[in-house]
Length: 434
Image: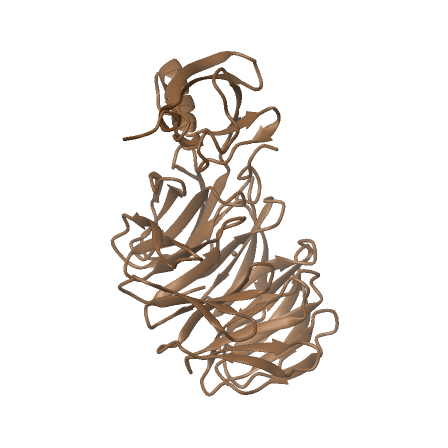
């Protein structure tokens, strides 16, 4: 029989933090979660507007943001508590497709608000600038393009690569763009003029992986020649060539302080390297298929990997296997740590994305709805939403707390290659390819 303490009922009042207007009052048990309060606020607003609302509530008690998955008791709520509701307007979504286009979508309405259609072949990647004002795309037409996210105008066409441009991203405070290509080079371009400032040349195979340090001083590339190279992003000098993989390098990552580098290969191994000396400090062995994605986790003290063997794994940087996340029925294409939580996000070509407990390895949430491979999965900056992009030609937006699909973005004519959040308006009020 439940104890009296287990059945404590409390009345919670909610009002708008902006207007002070009363929204609703609700009676709940203290073991209910803050998420229940969020849903009550959404229901009250929907009833008032007489239409569904996408605005997502942040709940505050005495100036403190409440965590959705906490119980009311754990959140410090008592009978008669007054909770303030802040409505967070959604940001935009950027997608890229093999149909040769990229699009910006309204997360609120699900409609396409901008169409970038000047590429003449498949668009491999699409990324916002850090301020959300620009986007850069890369394409099989051997170019990258910079776009104005307000007007849709193509501001620059970056021409010079002689083969597919696999990736493009902004760096150096959005002043430069970094691209990689099947022509075996990476290039740094001025985003304002479109001129090529540096060519990083030396690989003997096409470059399939790239990352850049947080201070924009170091570029790391991995290639089909089975090597990793470390480059000075200011001079273009190759500082180190890292050898040791017995197959092509498919993914790379760099620690926040720039001291350590991760590389994964189709030789089934992940290697940790010292960026200063070029020494391989650890080889993480255990996967039985090629690596698709590697990431640092837990403030660079752990490593996350995703593999063709249908699993993701968590390792210590000393080489110990900590956890195996098993349950996908297809290759694991994406992996990322959920911010501020001991959880991991993965996506797979089985058509699903999942969230796992880092401690137990259990699957805590499944995001199912795509009919083909989920080639892109990304967490919103506040960790409350997941955005997935699929070979079925659509992107979907999901709520992390309950797995609900709250928006579908459909309109591309072929498979998606990328989907990402705009950097603005996705935070609480207070980053693999197939």
